[in-house]
Length: 443
Image (cartoon, rainbow, N blue to C red):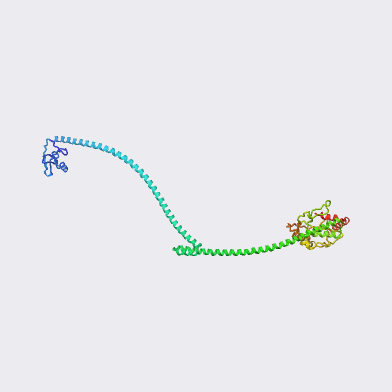
């Protein structure tokens, strides 16, 4: 006989704990206790059951029936194992479905994880950029703080400079107000040092200006003195110029009258010794350069009108005095009617330079050959003298010095014979018109 437990569906083994309720149903003790924890009724008839009313049963099994009991027990175990396998298969299927769902979920979670990782990297880059921006803004804030401090400092400096400017350029009352209202010791010290420096600079500038003023006064005095000297010199030169102008005008007028008289005498034919002496005296004292005097043509005219001809300025280096010498008269008489006042300074100087040496021999065709000492002295006098310019005034030429060589004079016998011969020829053919024409033809 095979008896099973209704709760666990297992066969009752001889060694198992079997209990019975008041209604007579039997169960395994462990199964019944677990059932009673949930419900106080019988698993088959649903009558009330308590743990006090349970009765333990003891079963005796014969040995002849052991084989059948083993087959039944094995069949029962096989059924239990198959049922367990079915349950396990169902559980495996459920777990496989759950595994697939889990794999899908895992895949989605991995994808989501990757997205989160990308998002994390993006947020990390954003965080790094934000950190850099925060750092930049911190630097800007520091720079702003520094600029603000510098602005405050510059405002204070500007205020101090304004106060210093007012103290330096303002009135005394303004400076006292600034010193009275200033509370900073550093500002007061700075203001005092600047005022002291300004005072020293003003003193040095004052000394410099005083020195320049003294120099300017001395320079003004010197310039005034020079102006006075120049005015005096100008007045003296002006007086000299007026005097020379008057003398030259008188001399020109006198020479015109003299030449007109000589021309009239030459045309009349009255030539005598006094006439020749007057010609020689006129040639000696005249300031005109005879080398550059215009030549008179005898065929066209017998005399020269000084008003119509232009006399160029004379050259002291090329000027030479040509005198007319008569062989029968060795002395030159100083009987010219030319007054000393009308001769002027140049006529007197020329008269002193030429002298009245009667031993000298002159010719109208040949000039005198001076010695070395005489030529040197005459060149010095000519270079330093003032000559008549033919226009009513005088001028002094700056002549470049030229070397003067020593010339040997010819024997006196030859010179005297030539002069005698020329004088004899001149005595035989003496004509009034020819003498005056030769005098004018000199060039």
